[in-house]
Image (tube, rainbow, N blue to C red):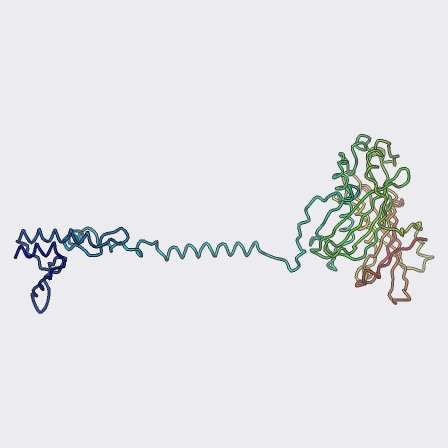
Length: 423
């Protein structure tokens, strides 16, 4: 009997006898790997069992580097008291899928929220265009170009940029032009040679023709250049276009003279300063048909057949002064329009303006603004054109600025713009 068991242990292909059943077909609790009931008291049976287990472990492959698929009853009995973990398989060695999925979902939702905040796009692609560049020299260094975006605080009640906004763009490009050319001294647009002599530029005349007014979010392209004007003056011109369509928005020209910072008197241009600026002169006019008419004195109200409006008590604020300690020239335009009737501002827009600066205005000045309105009717279009004469003076009498403005009805197309004619 012992020999047959040993032989069957080494020869697994040998037929094995069916194990006896104990009660009602139940098998014994202790079986060897071949299903043969083990006898505890038999040493030969124990040896055969150990040999069978050795061959079984050698023949059955391991899964995932773990133990064999068939369990050792004796080993299971010993390990059941220390650990009840399931056998190591490919599946249960993977990470916890629920935790991994939750982590991925959290990261995705956070990224989506951040992208939603960063991926805001305006309704018009040209809005919020980067216009913070300093600008660049063009036309072989004879012209300067800079872009500006119309901000929300630069528009008025009619949702378009104000004339003061456009004038500020002109002034900014002029100063940046001087800086880009390497001619900016320690003054407000003064060259190094001008700074040595306490000289600075002041505007004496300016003319601007507005084709249309840009809206919030529009980007405008401003070109500026300088040229000679007489023996002791300089001319500066501008051309503003829509950066997308290229259509003209505004054309302007101006005349500048020098003033001494200490004496506040006009001065001649020194030869050293002329040598600095002459290489940048570009003889080209933005406005060919200039309004050179002499601005007349405003008529007295008793003898006039036109409407006249007055606004008094205008005083400069500290913020209205520039670094040369006088009122910025753009501020004068706002004061001039202070006396214009509200009916004109509501139904018309400024088409052109001519300014003749007579003297500077300090921080302690008290001014008054006069506007005289003339009404003309265009026989061809039937539209009413307004022509205004303006006078800004000190309340003590001296004139600060004279101006002439022309107004067109709002909604007039650019080709119908009214351009002052010379006479």
